[in-house]
Length: 80
Image (cartoon, rainbow, N blue to C red; front, side):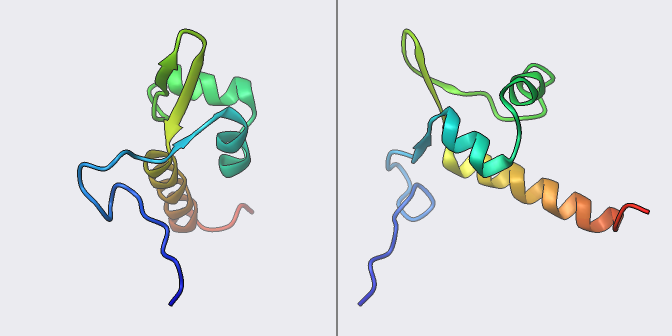
């Protein structure tokens, strides 16, 4: 039987997976300054504060944002 990765969607009340900045940048393809600009415009999920100088993003929220962007781009069609 294959191992299944468990997340908050599988078990309500469980701790969500958190992504640090490099993983968010790889996942989204955004640059650091663009990411923080989108956060300030409330167009990207805000990070969760882990410690005084450490933040992370909920994986589920980042994936939802990326999926919504992909769907929007698909609806608009290719750039001509």
